[in-house]
Image (cartoon, rainbow, N blue to C red; front, side, top):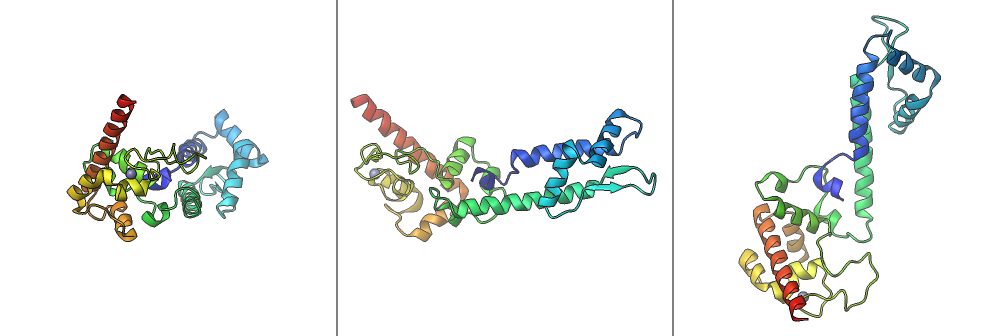
Length: 235
Ligand SMILES: [Zn+2]
């Protein structure tokens, strides 16, 4: 979810990109160097990194990534930058599809596929919002906002209870329904509660403005924390 939300490659793809850059440099370098001879050995005998790389090519529907550089030396094999880019692009596309599939079949983060259907960096990351606000937007959109209700943990209604009322403290309850936050909703959205599902989703999509969403969440989080510390102080 976080990768989709931030439009970032996985660590695997980022590392592969660096690795291919290094291999490209090596394969276009001095043919008398031991590193080039080892590289050629890997390719010719299909061992080590070359074997793994060819498996990745197959996964991406490409036969190979190694080219014979006939123009300068017929026996020389080198890695083409263009083919490396093609491999990375294809693997990236596959990764996107897998992530979208996981998001749409997610057991616990059910609203995610309703609020995100692309792999682009979200605008709230570049609109001048402080990080304290941005991280709350990410937490809410990926349903990782810290609340008592955690659907992935088996718990009872007492531990899942809202800090204000007897309802289960779910994300939608806190953001759109709980009376403990009425004043915040009135202030930002001119309404005590927001029960319309489309309106809820549109807020999470930032249709009003990311600045408003960031400030709204910051305020909800601040009030919840105050309420929590008050109740801990009393008990
Ligand atoms: Zn409540």
